[in-house]
Amino acid sequence: MTDTNHGTSPVPLIVLGDYETADCVGELADTASDHGATIAEIHAYPPGTAHDADDLADVEGAVGALAAAITNQANVWVPYPLQDMPREAHWRRLSLALQRHGLNLVVGPHLVPSPTTGGINEADFALRAEVRAVDRLDQAALSAAGAESLAAEIERTLRDSAADPTVTAVPRMAAKDDGVAKSLLECLKDLEHRHGPAPLLPAQAAPWPARRSALQRYARWLVGTCGLPRAVTADLLNALGQRTATGRDWQRATVSALVNGRYERKNAA
Image (cartoon, rainbow, N blue to C red):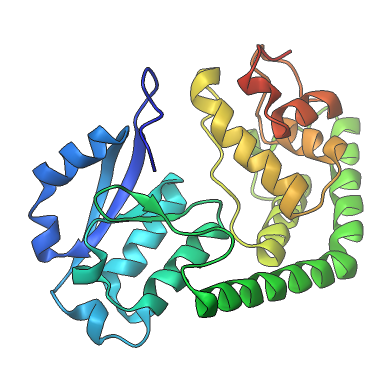
């Protein structure tokens, strides 16, 4: 990871290491700053814990760091991998878990990212390839089993909602017995059950520059991961109270612009 963030906001990082690493917060902050990053949180565990654990899920600090990374959409940084996470299997599993959420594990004083393709050796390459092949097969089977009917259910829910003048956007639905809101939320929960946790949505009232990246991640998850049509994605974003940079409803074309990154290069419609 090189410093490519001059003139932009620092990239947030979740630091993971043992207690001795956590005590070096000042030095770590300086190193992160040199690479255009900032420390968002530090998660630590007693020295030797990761070395002794056969399963990283048993290391509370590691699980906490992964949860914080997913919540904050931030990479995890292990500054001293040989000291704090010497088992190759641990950081391979951690990096693969992060990569499923569009994140990554960076290691060492130069914040070197874990490989997203290939591997550090032949065994690592084979294991990563096998994991990704299984993921693709699983996603293809889930998509064939229910993605089409799920998209149709979402479209029907939103169509019924639009035809009822008493129904407003999902976040504004306060009545507990509101069937439309429940149906739509159940659809979204089903998407997460099938395809993993959704990226966080930004606050509706936040300014566009603060919303763009989060909205892009959410739209790419709906379109790329869940396989929903762009028109359905636009309806979902609208129902969730999200609007374009100029406050307009999302349309198929503007969703395409968001997903393809055109909002990063010019003003949105």
